[in-house]
Length: 568
Image (tube, rainbow, N blue to C red):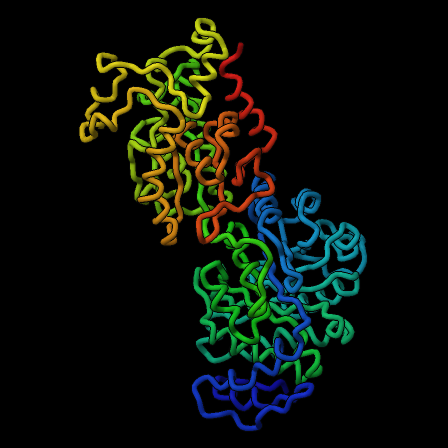
């Protein structure tokens, strides 16, 4: 008869350990959480050579575009240390394109495998041999969603694990209890006697010895619910699993087998969970579809391990407003308050969609007092369902003031004054266009939104240098402190005000900045270290450290389009 457990048995059960090179105390001290008194002898303390494991289960989520965004996120998430193994499990149909574009140090897992050992007349099934031939390394078996929704019993899960291992695949074996099981103190009986016992009976000892099996403890009540087991709850079950492996197989197998946790793991709780001595990594669900998956990868490292190079501490997203009505008419706009064109609204909506698919979240938004930037900002936030976050509008984020050029057609101005002169006005760093006068309809002093500004603050014209100076004040005094405090920030502004900002961030030379073009409506994502210094992204274009979200070829074409707004 299978041994039954309840919560009162845990201390005595966990005390019976015999480990390589270590003798454990036969009596557990009478403390509320005795397991920490000796669990260090297991797992990491004995087998420091084993790799931490981070698995990302995409489940039945996404499409081709989302897959490409996630692959790009993973490709650009920085160095993965040799002591960490990363595996992702996309939906079956997307495994091909994901594998073609994914970095080689991240491996592929299937979310399911047929119970049949060989190919045959099994419509709709995919056998282990096929997955192996396709280039898949791992397969997930026993996930609670398949146990519940597809009626997979412990016997079926054990059989699937067996045939997968026989085909040369490695197995991420999921086990865990329901909330009802936990409330009845039946956790260990379910995990050990129902789930793991069936696996042990079905698979070869050599697969345990070869580290071909990872055990994922996933409390069913914490999967996809937003709930998570406390670190102590997770540690207790992990330790019980390890002791069971020691009893049923060997202390060596118990110590070297990776036991990972998978119950609503995210970027906020992973750092605490990984401190538990018997948690060897994570199987991640929803957070695997978000940028925080990179944070989870980084947290799954042994104490004291340091990656080379700077560490991203903050993300900053910049977006130039979508195409405006005067952009379409190829006119110098400056501080004149024109609205978005229909195309500009579509660009802003697409930007919101890309950011949502990338899993971006924001706490604060900053924009100018001009409606083309405000509408872009609010459209993006609407797409992210973040219209409730604080949005600060400030004139210092306005477009560069084009002086007497405002309202003029750019090409007509070239025809009148020549391309060289217009390029000096439009592109030089420190030479402003001709100034307007207070009598001009475009003088900002006529507009009540600038009523509180002094005459010295209201420009008659501006160079990029002056734009950088006034934006720089607001960055230093307001935006940068917010980012340092941990706020996630998006800035929706203008071509020249954003050029001024990236010049400051990337320390771009005066010569280089004159040739930099920022396309409308495309999110530009910066990774910043703790000192707000930018970390160069592999997809960065030109002198920028940040990278644009979206199709890179299309983005380069749009950048070229901005460049060609004035021609000789």
